[in-house]
Image (cartoon, rainbow, N blue to C red; front, side, top):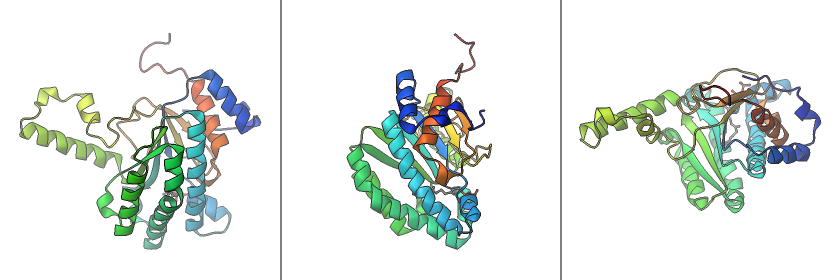
Length: 258
Ligand code: FPP
């Protein structure tokens, strides 16, 4: 696990960092991000938490553009956990409204940029308006082939594994699969992320060093990068810093170094 800046990368401009990342070549195919610290960011400014989430929405835009420029293929963002339903009603409805606003504002541009949006989680709990917005953005961006953007909403990693296990059990009960034929690939194929490569890099902002039930199966071999920045301050420069740090890692996947 790596502590975040100060690092030499931070002295470089975003375009210098991007140029260096591109020359180096090994850009992570899939980056997952636990966007954390909106509340603390707002509190430091004596503002309500919803103001932090609104500023966090701008950071989402910034990071999507940064990922496109760097040539990342998949970006997975943890936008709302199952546990987040237990937050005060006002905060939950502010987050749902922001999701609708984000989709209303960005869907056309995302489609034009070649981004394909997928929304994963227990979507049955969304308000009808939020559920409609989610359906709309997935339809509107269906032809995107530059970047897959996974938004995890009402999501929990353990619940995802329970869901996959139930599907496996149903397949075995129906005779479509034998117990002996259950492999890692069969499990992966029943996760929301079926078809995506596993994340190479998992970023968490705000200095916290936890997985918080995000993509538990998929991050088995991800490199971790903890940024001390609060999410609203995380921009493309910070993203490039994390990618540059990733490029210096020696990924062994349990084997010895080459
Ligand atoms: C964690 O910060 C952040 C969230 C629970 C919500 C993330 C939402 C956004 C970034 C904005 C909307 C996103 C999209 C995709 C439209 P926290 O509230 O837990 O912060 P704290 O730990 O400082 O209290």
